[in-house]
Length: 191
Length: 182
Picture 1 (cartoon, each protein chain N blue to C red):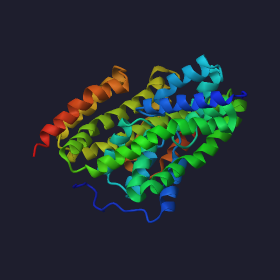
Picture 2 (cartoon, one colour):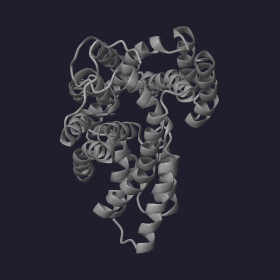
Picture 3 (cartoon, one colour):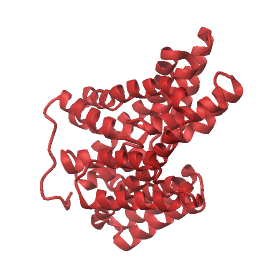
Picture 4 (cartoon, each protein chain N blue to C red):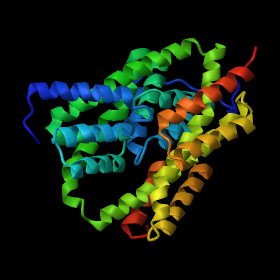
């Protein structure tokens, strides 16, 4: 598949590469891991092209389960089979799990402090910006989409409107727009 | 923390495995149903403990699914965290592995290519919607609107234009917030 990236994707050498890559990105992922995952896997390590990342993320979002966890499982499995999937999962969850449980035991003492609520607000605003930036970066991957840029942008806008504007539930939006969009792609991919 | 009977543990495991299969869009989307089970039906934890569990997991590094471990921890200590995490992860993990392998094997077929390409714009639309949903509380809150929007715009610009790790942007947000700038 043609991609916009100049360098071909690389491949991790060992299982511990997989573990530490996901460990590293999970520990950087305050307020959501997705933005860091894109930066680490696509831009820094080049294990995936932007297009491949978008493909895996689309599959991960449709499947039940946490999106980044599904993505890490599928990528680890692609490189090293089941052992790779489990290494990715362990890297993603082990260290953050310990930290979050320590925080949970400490939280009750600091819950009321305005310092803490201010910090959470600031982190929340940045987290929103990170997600928006990740989406804007992936928009470039639509240039190679058989739907064509115009049609793809209309579908982006319709999804945004349905979820953020009309607050329709996610399964309803996927069930409504999904078949339409996949049907159009099927038609345009006519052999 | 409560003393739970073996039957309770099995009930927890079964409930969270069911939630796992329902968690399209991420584990957080099952929070209302999880709340109904552990707070309203079983009275294992309070409303406040449940909300705090989500807030803590969002502030901590790592995937948001870890809020499930905090809920489990509050329900039944270390074993509670273990059982709830196994429950929420096991079914979705097996399904993801199977689906990932199946689609890798058939990725050249017209059907899979139509599916992958057709879903791509929806995925981007969903990400933008998530950004909007996270930002919207700030827009409605006149006291914090300007500072929060400035931070949001700055983090978009720095993410697009530089190679800085998102972690430092979150740290900047925490600092600005702690100093009362948001």
